[in-house]
Length: 152
Image (cartoon, rainbow, N blue to C red; front, side, top):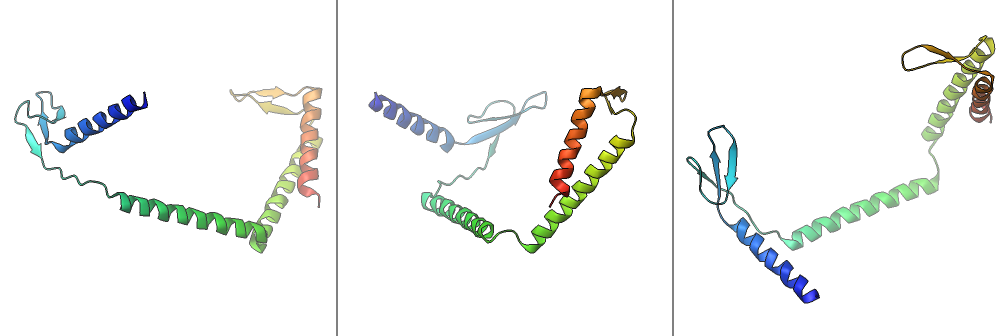
């Protein structure tokens, strides 16, 4: 079974390499469609000068090895940075983000407290008023956000 598969793969490889080794011709039909073929046919076929070179396995292997080494270096640098902990700039940016989220949550809570009825807009832009359970859930969500972002 394996012998048949190997033979079929080898035969396919030989046939495809022979197909790519020949000339390529380009021609345009009466409708303006461009055709590419390995045998001259159609009106005024033009032989294309295509130079193909065999792939150098050693060069490809060295390129792959260099890419793998670069990825490994990047992973090691990220791991070292993570082990050191966040920088002062990252800590300051995180603190600023939390302050903005806290302000937004407090503003939303103030709007909830001062509004008679809460609503959301549907896809058509119409107001859909929240029932009591939805209002409680919305307020609880904002209270949780305030606890999360405004706490220490």
